[in-house]
Length: 67
Picture: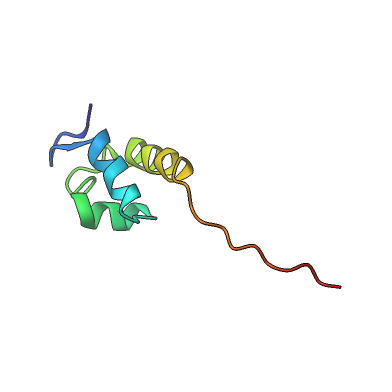
């Protein structure tokens, strides 16, 4: 599905950016161009980025418990 018609950015592009480490909407705009023109897609782009970031498995460091 196209999210940003102005720059041809799809939901797949946003998921791929998240998988590549994109963590914020300004960074997403820099990487994909989403929202750089009219801005009408920013709310949906931010929502999709948040959803994609939530599904990425991040390694968690296990810290020793304080005695």
